[in-house]
Length: 92
Ligand SMILES: [Zn+2]
Ligand SMILES: [Zn+2]
Image 1 (cartoon, rainbow, N blue to C red):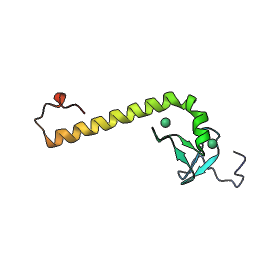
Image 2: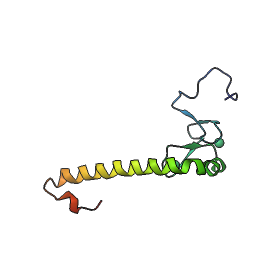
Image 3: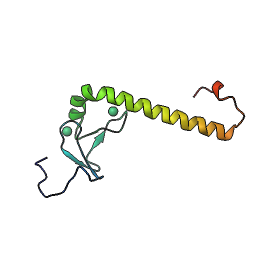
């Protein structure tokens, strides 16, 4: 936090997010996101590895929610194309 001393609040800036592990401010392009959920950001692979034990459960939840959202979307898409299809029989 003391790294930036110019009065900018980087926490509310959409283009800069803190590293989930070490809190370093990460600008667009300088950050790596969790490859699975893409909702955690890291300054380095080392930080991602260090944070994984804590992040693992949240990551699984996030992926599950995203998976359910995608499945619902796909189901809507199928229903739009095949309004009479028995959706229960379509395994998504
Ligand atoms: Zn970091
Ligand atoms: Zn994740």
